[in-house]
Structures are given as structure tokens and as C-alpha cells.
Image (cartoon, rainbow, N blue to C red; front, side):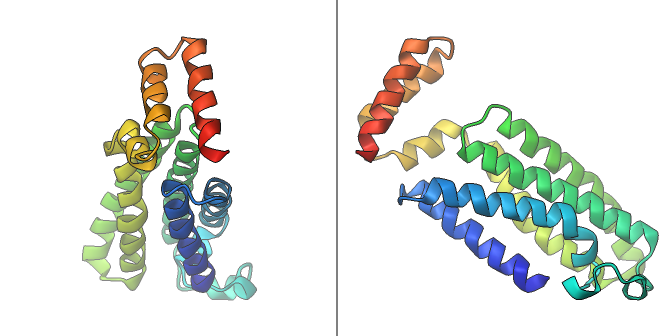
Length: 193
């Protein structure tokens, strides 16, 4: 499971870099890898955080050392990771509500971390250390996309395409003006021609 997680993480990093540097295929690859990462945590977090492999996924014997609370906690953290990665995917696809989805995921992580810190100081379990490392990475990524204004990321991404950026800024300033959005779309298409 950890190898799968690492492969997906590498794919996410590569695809985000491709997307930001306008490398062809970056947008679709970021959609695929972020979706895979989100679904991976959604479906397999309970097994991943309890150090189980795919072949032992549904075998009760491998969950003997895991309490019900650990399994529920792993599912809760996995769902928060799911929301954060889904929100980042929405962010790159320019869907409305992307920041809200990331924000909800981060709030879920806060609750899980508070409980995890309390449990960690009582038990010093490696289980919580594994979760904390992932929380720092995925939570930090989510926090980045909440704190950095989208226009700043777009300015960096399209730094060599000033006409598109100007059209996009005008459209953002008047979101209900359809003509400005059409002009921005025309300028965007020029980039890829």
C-alpha cells in the first residue's frame, strides 16, 4: 500500500508542476493523479494507516492490534485527505467551491489531529506518527491553496502570457460579465495554438 501511495504522490507532484509550468498534458494528468489520490485515501485509509497490504485488506486477523477507534480515526483522516485532494483537483480545473472543499477537509484534519495528539502522548504509537507525517504534507498543500490567492498562482502560471492575464483579471473583477469571460477564453486558446 505504501508503494502505491508513493507512486500516486510522485504523480501528483509531477502533474502539479506540469500544470503550473504549462507543459502539455499537465491539466489532465493533475486531474487523474489527484482523483486517484483522493480515491485511494477515501477507500483504503483504514488499511494504510493500520499497516495492512492489499492482499490482507479484508482479513480480520490483520486488524487484531487495531482498535475500533484507530480504524474510525483512520477513516476520518482518509476522508479529510480525500476532500483536500479533491478540492485541489477542483482548484486546478477552476471549479467553483474548490477552496471551500479544501477548507472543509482541513477542518476535519484539525479535529483528527487534536485527537491524535492526545492519543499519541498517551501511547507513543507509531500509528500516529505515520498519520502526522501525511497530515503535514497533504494538510500543508491544502493550506497553501487556501492562503495563496488564486490570481497569484495564475499570474505565476501565465507569467509569459500577459494578454491572457489581463483579460482574466478583468473577468475576475466582473464575474457576471459574460463578454469578459469570452474574451479571456479567446486569449486562453491563443496560448495553446
